[in-house]
Image (cartoon, rainbow, N blue to C red; front, top):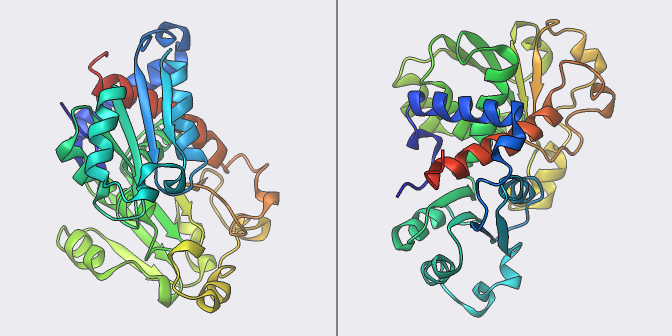
Length: 304
């Protein structure tokens, strides 16, 4: 039985197979419409989510399966003090597979050690968000035709952004990937990523503050929001929340084939005027998220 706690739980060869399956699902949805008949997915979300939770639910229903679970800790027995270990033991009696989001880093990993069904980490604090990373990789591979040989800019909250941390760890396994980190000083990438992930593996990167200084050099721009829920005080959040706003003027500096990705939700960091630009692919990214989660469910249940 396999669990998914990190994108690195898959080799690049296994990812190729997963993405090939996702591509086949995109092209032939009818072929997969009943493959999970009689199967149940439990969504255990201890903190709010729209995209990830609904994407998992849509993925399972598209496969013919059913969904049960809870959408916040207050509506679960966690509000009575039940541990994650006990919850997953109980869920294992009801469902065939579980997607878990939790504000505490490592909580899904703890659950996986006590579970009798596959557990997917759907986000644990500021640590990992593997299925978002799989979504990002599938989007890049599908729209650019390759994983590797590009320059990617990551902009915004690089300190607390778990999607950023997961994506960096996943992309360093591909050849000729260059990183440009665009953030205010207060939200720079953590030292452990700079030293233990990038420098240790001789990965080329640069850190800049102004988006305008580097956007012309990018093949991909990965925008992120400044996350209010990760700040200890409102004053710092208000000061930094509008530090970057991608608009038509900045897009005019970019390459004609540069793609803009965003894990969503968006707040102010991408102006709605950018939505009609063909280079803005963040809503396509959402659709790819459904395909890759369908492929992941099938793979973990050994149905494909």
